[in-house]
Image (cartoon, rainbow, N blue to C red; front, side, top):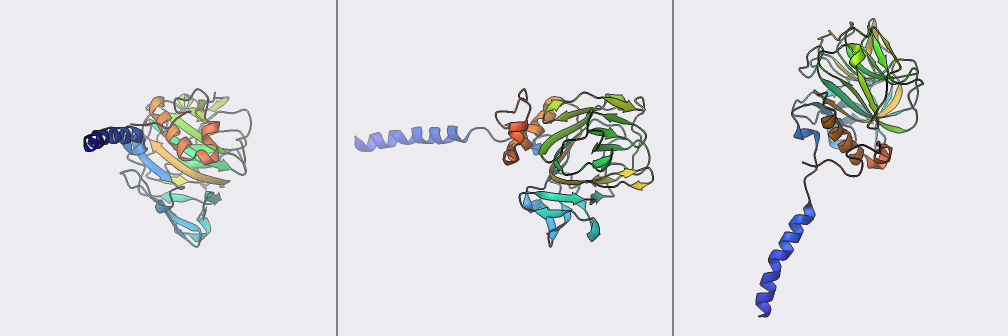
Length: 274
């Protein structure tokens, strides 16, 4: 009888162990809408030489790595502070993720701004130097979508400094500049002004810049900032974007992102699962 009691207890132990594992964590790999996925907090994806970053690997299936071969333009890698950009830039001159000129797009960034040097501090830029590009930016005028021939601004004051922030620049496919949207820590921010609101993105050049952008006449002055992560998605579905926001907030909870996440966000209390 003691042996029978022991054997009967084993299935119960296995069931409890299985239940305690819980559902699997959702990641950007779970959706085909992820076009670029960069985690500077994942040291295995960062190539650095003497503390200078030469490449950040794309964790998506697309393999669109961002690199910098010029030493004077290489951001600095610091454990716990991730990538420090001081007029630096990581680039790819052979891809735009297969995106159309005016696609569904969401650019989700975890950054820590140290300065606002002017009204156009590029964070992430897709396209060349011509008009109709796609650039997620910050600056003295506030958070902004810029297109080199128009803009959509989302703040009545300068972008917030000296705190980690989770931002999303979002646009629906086929829309004009006035349809551009912006979310700060999961909460949508109303636009305060626009320039050329009826303009549309037209640029198809295969160029990507992280850390600064390019204006009509060449490279823009960069900002001083730290970047911990970027996710580029071909979607304007807010519910899908919220999954990426929730994923990053909980992955980087030590940066205060869960606390900062909007109280109404669906993944405020727990990370998304599959």
